[in-house]
Each structure stands twice: as structure tokens, then as C-alpha cells.
Length: 255
Image (cartoon, rainbow, N blue to C red; front, side, top):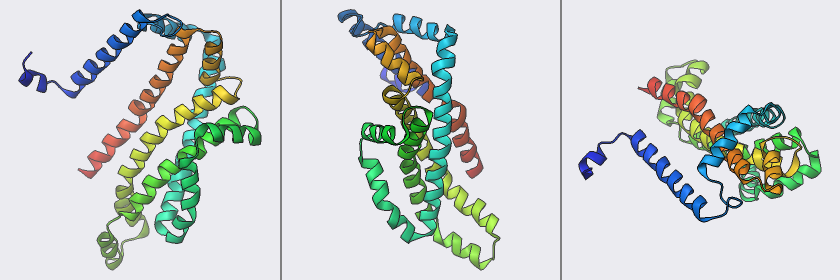
């Protein structure tokens, strides 16, 4: 295949080619290491389908994790967006939040998991609280920066022509914040699922993270890899089902 024909491949073609390369490299590693260290792609897929056929796993581990992810996304994104909007309107408030934002973005997640376990014990409350707390600064920074970047000339024009408040919010602020908000949400979603699994692994009696801990203890490598793959599929599912359609809708509205 010539260089010119390769360059004409659609982006999806390059994505699929990258996936094939990753699977090939994974298979090579599995062939050169023990199955206790690296599970093969075939064994991993077999274990993954086995998880979906296991009703106990679906009820005891997958369902609680999805519920925690949903709650954490709701509280984390909601609080981050609200604080970001307030920080954009009230500059002293933004300065007041700067130390807390710096602390939350600097401290390792595992440290906060331990602290929140002392405060809330183990279970859903701890997992949701720590995940929402760590997610909020990501959304907050994006929304606050978006508020600061709102075109002041448009605001002055809206003031001169006495646009009603709802029109200013929808036509100026909402359109300016849509891009930064969605960017922050995409980052926060991936971070959210990683944190939920980490918190479940250290301080929960059910969930994908807890199942990972059990698989590691029992040296069930194929199931361990399958659970990891399932976590990635959840991230991809949320992005494809919710975030990407929202991004396209905003792009169409701007056009």
C-alpha cells in the first residue's frame, strides 16, 4: 500500500489499525510470559463474557459501580460547574477557592481514599464523596476559565440593547461555556471511573474494584484483565452515548 493511499484512510481506519497493533502486542506478551502474569486476549474475552453471564456479578458488583459512577458524576459535575460559574461572576470568590483547588489537584487520590474511609467508613457514601470531590476541580477550572473568556464586547452590547437576563444567559454565557464544560466533563468522566474503582478496591465490599481485589488475591489473571477491560468499556460507553452526541449538538447549534 502506497503512502498516498494510506493517507486517504478515514480516521476510523487508523483507530482500528491502532487497536489491532495493541492486541498484537498484548498477544506477544502473553505468549512470552506466564498466564499468571499476562492473560491472553482470548482468555480475557472468555472471562469477560463469563462476567456478563454471571448474574451474581451483575447484581453484586456491576450494578453498584454504575450507580456510584452516576451519583459521582451528578454531584461532581454539578458542584464543579456551579462553583465555576460563581467564580466567573465573583472574582474574590475565585481567589478564595484557589487554595482548595490546588490542594485537591495536588494530593494523591489514594491518600484521600484513606482519609475519607476514616470519615465515612466503607461503602457507597465514601466512594461517591471522594470521587465527586476529586472530579469537581476539573470541571470547576474549565468552567471558570470559560467564564473569564466570555466576550466582554458582547456583554456590553447586550447591556446597551437591554437584552433580558435569560437571553444573555442562553445566547452569550451558555454558548461560551459549552465547549469548556464538555471538555471538563470528558476529562472528569474518565477520572471518575478510575477513582470509583480505586475507592472500591480499598474501601468497599462490592463493586468492580472489590472484584478486582478478589481476582488479584486469587491470582485469577484472566478475570483481572476482563474487569480492567470492562472499566474501559464503561468509559467508552458513557462518552459515546452521552458526551459525543452532546458535543455534536453544540457544534450544530454554533454553526
